[in-house]
Image 1 (tube, helix red, strand yellow):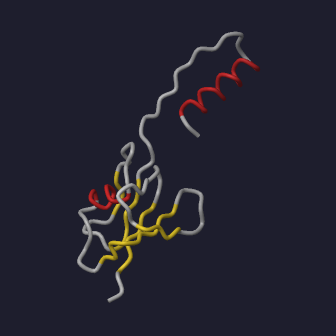
Image 2 (tube, one colour):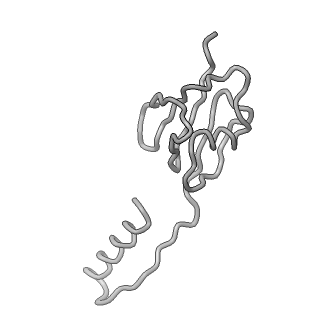
Image 3 (cartoon, rainbow, N blue to C red):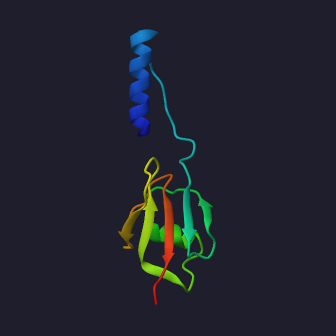
Length: 107
C-alpha cells in the first residue's frame, strides 16, 4: 500500500465509525531495507532509497566480486516464495524489502 492508500482507508474507517470530519496526516518514517547477497564485496542489509536500481544496490554493497555473474541477478520481492531471474540492466528497479542475489558466473 502507498502512503496515500493508508491515509484514505484510515479516513474512511474513522469517518464511518467514530467521527464526522476527519483530518489526518500519514507519513512514512522509513521504508523496509533491501538485502544484497551472493557475489558482492559486502553482502548485507542496506537502506532503500527512492528510485533505487539493482546496479545501485550492488554498488552500495561494494560492487561485484571477481567471480560474479554481471549479466543476471536473482530478485525476490516481499511476499513471494520464489526468486525471479532478471537480466541486469541499468534501469532494473528495486522495491523496499527486495532481496537481490548475485550468482557466481560459469566459466
